Length: 409
Image (cartoon, rainbow, N blue to C red; front, side, top):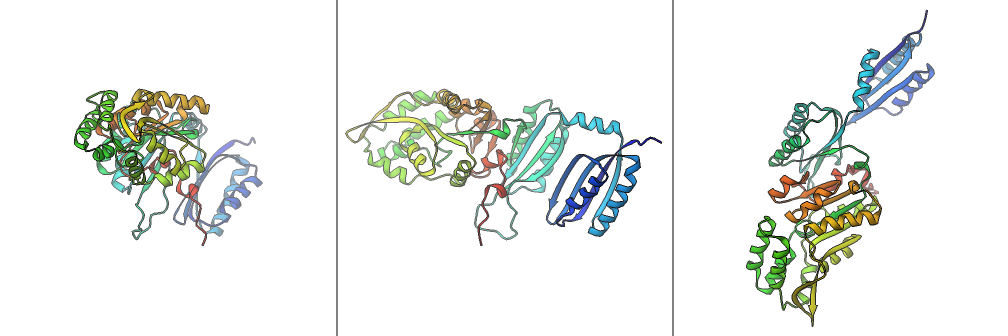
């Protein structure tokens, strides 16, 4: 009698015990079973383990018998499901479909959030493969750090209309949730360079407004800034107008402002970790090099490109030297940095909040609008509005438990 091939799915669930996977796979090895797929998930102290094996009909009975004994000895539940070869082959074909990563980010991620996101995924005929939590365990008592929560879903299928799904996700930001949708390709796993806008992104102010306050032209400059940010007037034109109003300001004022810049939540943690994992970082700003260099020294950015205020006899002249960094120039600098670092533009990330950041956000492999104006949010692929800059780490797929050294007790 010939021995037919059998495909069996084994599901184990119960309390997580050390050595469980090892003792079960040892039995499979003894009977030369071939493992087609294996996956495990742990929640709290319980585990579910799935193993898909290929064996032959003369061995399958012995394998199941021994596994049953072992499972009862370990005190876990075990279930066997025979899989038809045709079903297995169809499953393999589906594996090749497009994969996407959906990241849910917020101060807290609620059941309502997860229900809304998973419904949108289901409505778009996508399938969820895995769910992992990227943030650390949630303490039941409030701790003094700003809370943050992040859950990452891996989904697959043929997405007919990506922008429509992104739009559905965007609408959830009203519920205090940021949702990122990224294609899960080789570039997502090998990002190398991150370029940041400075004003209202790395720092919670527009430096030009601060300078204007000191020069006594605050209201005039703020009005022009607002119009530029809304995209009503050309950035260059508005920039030149605003800088001219700063004429005669004493240089010591710049030093004082730099020392008191309001740093955006999460900047220090983000930079520490980006450097630890080997990212190159750049500030591409329509602001001023003086403040960009201050941040570079303080947090260790690799590059700064911004506007150089002209100074004569210790005072601002109301002019800038060199080329003005506007939206077009930011995108150009992003491209140049990629060439210089010898990376594909798809490996670059750009982060900003204003209309003049859109060219660079759209050019980078991953463009993130950070606490941005509605117009910018709508045009950017990804948004972070709920938490600080370290939220970017989760969009890169980094997990708290792997990026934070455990404190030694």
